Image (cartoon, rainbow, N blue to C red; front, side):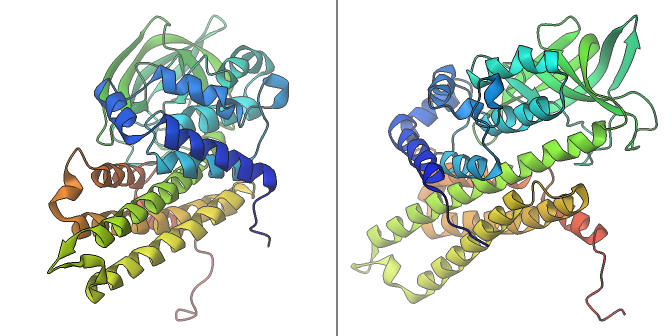
Length: 380
């Protein structure tokens, strides 16, 4: 299997890396966090680079790129710990709309997404779901030819700033049934929609969103809604894995630089053998994470059963790596590692949030276990 990137992919990586380095430095990020966790100016700059149309078909004004290009972009955004919800909008929402929405909805929203003029996000989390996608209590009913949605969704990315939401809502069945879940588009300006925004631990922005008989447009019917929701979650997981690799790569470099600069007993502490061993362990975990991120991306177009298992396997390894690299970096830095003025702690916060997004490590370990088809031989 060829793991070399094409010239076009390397050019894309270089363009995003240059923007992150020059246009989204640590000080700008801190200002964005203090002003609410989202910058329309930064969003417009990413749109000018063409990033918002990455997963949008060319016919709708996008670039029509695939999962590998998305992974390349997410790694570079991870290096800059960019707080704007790029993956949630440009990969997850754009993927659902371009692959599954009615043509009229695509024509209405995809060109605006590609131009950076609209924010559409997936609003799927519920308070009692515990990462289980089929646990849906929000309801949808068709009344006089108009769909209406009622219910609440939690931790919706930029939920108080988004223009519309992709909302899983139950049309029929019990709370945990896989059948009976539809996906609907609800605009934030619609009647019956209320939001409460707040900052997240990593400096980004989220909101609680309530729907009270809000008018909606049907995207995916109850026969296929759950499967499309799983697909959207897997796209988000792969994007999060790639972002985490970029963040860990940058955090590792920051840590090595600190060890080679900080002196004790007249010599850099990076010369101490015990600390070198810990750095070697960090590097090993980083490379394991990178391999599994590639694996996750390459499995996105497999059949659903293999894709779901592969993405859970990747999330387990990435969760372990994120926790290890983040904790080791903070310990090797000492007290300065958790100060607001120093970048290491901000990487650690972002990695911690990524580890808990779309299922934490323990959740996905259980998912992998549930999908095991063969024994290791000891129980045969």
